[in-house]
Image (tube, rainbow, N blue to C red):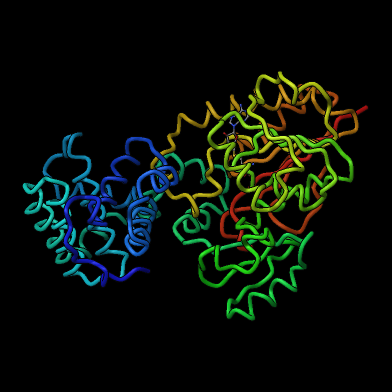
Length: 447
Ligand SMILES: C[S@@+](CC[C@H](N)C(=O)[O-])C[C@H]1O[C@@H](n2cnc3c(N)ncnc32)[C@H](O)[C@@H]1O
């Protein structure tokens, strides 16, 4: 956790005050922008120490957003106007520091009050000061008020908690709690270049502790979160940052020498690189509908020194046309767009961005993609349907419906010791065996 020792500097505006900038970014998050994109676009001029503090605050506020938001209601006579969303978010920043960060309370209050001035809203300085000091005095009282509401207790959006309770009656509390824990940094060792054991030795030589992820041959979990560029062989493609659950995709698709493989929703290319590490002689095509995100596939493959082995092109998997859709494939990876309810540990802004109504739209889009891509699979070929969701509507219910409608599709049962067996396919849950929540179903096309 970042301490507050880096504060007090000759600030000249929000850009020079980490808390003010965090509040601005959080206001944009509330308006629908993802933190990943905001960090890329808005932190270019910020010092590394301030960047770390801003990220810690933004991730933390997003993680506890439902609870922090409800807390503010006990302090404000009326909701803030839309034009003052930045001040509302600054209040959340103050609450988060006082409740969850190790920042000294007096520094947290003083810096947050100062941030209101940096946001050019000096009228809000008194309000922020008064509310934060009251929270210091009345914290226990206000937190007790939240205990009766499970959604506030778990800091999980109400709609999502209800869906988790229905889908995972035994595990919903464990999932909601996992959402609030920072995940470990997980790596995928490129076994085509170095064995996992040798890589562990390299890390140990640099005083970096690590341990293998059970059931994931290339997976490692690190103690701490070193900068990736300091990892041995990172620039040479020995290793990539990837959750253990995500690494199961390559193993399940199991590409064989010379096969034609389609990665139909490829960006940013985490699984694309893994497929080539597993079998470099495949004829791999990677498509994504989003041209900007596709650029990240190319960059990732360049670092792995694998960009010559793959055809990367923009395409809509729901409307196959163009050169990529002209031939049939032996293997298809369908890592469809989804609610991302399995990866909230790593992307806590999902709690703010996602709405209940999104689920039905995502299910519809996933179905369109699955139905459209199925004809591109050769008879005897394998399609791996994958999501990073824990919601059955996007997972087993989606695949069950497909199997009922397509008699040339058959499930290949995944025999594994990881995760949970579903009516169709298999699911990992957030926090179990270090992994995020992923769903996989293997489908075979009958001859
Ligand atoms: C879960 S992400 C894929 C992650 C990727 N497989 C990886 O491991 O790095 C889903 C991707 O699907 C893409 N997508 C959404 N709709 C699509 C469509 N109709 N056709 C192709 N790609 C699509 C999104 O742009 C997004 O990059």
